[in-house]
Image (cartoon, rainbow, N blue to C red):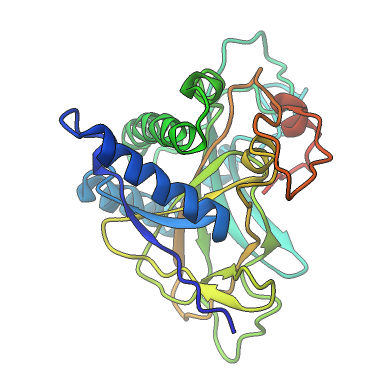
Length: 313
């Protein structure tokens, strides 16, 4: 049985201008170790006020529980190439053989021609319920982009590479913000069919905010056999690295498999923020790892995104 725990990392040294170089290096090394060993970590003292977390969760819950079916239908995800659709933005019910959930997706908007739009390059469809959901979500997204860039600089410090190698490819992150609602369940739960299937994220870094439910998010332990619960810790963000950061570091950092098993009778609200590269970024191994021979020769982010399945997560 695995004894490794998901670490809690205090990120204040990278946000305080008065921090010493030694303090920044210590924090960077803690992040580095978490990414090498687990691929998940909790982030504390990240600069985002708890009141914003509460408002994000409250707005998501209000939308899923009070928005009418007509309003949800009005902003449902539409196919790319047809009118204002881009296959990516808006509301949908995610139905899978292994369970499902409701989702509301927003992505960074780029200056592109259209409509019609190609996949991912449309305009966000914001709900009317609640009225301040858009303003709060956009503020939240901008704060997480800044936080993501700061973390990438910390990675660069720990890895001994120029921070521009990372920062120049994520400073206009093609972020994706999801609000998700997992329905409550009754009776006995089939652990193989409740929530979200086992997967790794394909981008750079995921910031996860959830409500108070425990036992729902499961993370595969380094031994590849046991599952650890990544329960919410008040005031922190649950973070995990994605496949592209693993490519970027030539396998030194590990994108870890995880899944959702929601067993509560009450709805669970989850808000992942996918901090991905710039739309036009090319991601290539920059380190070279003698222990892990990478087969990756590099990828274009937009090719990975547009080549993904219709609903990529």
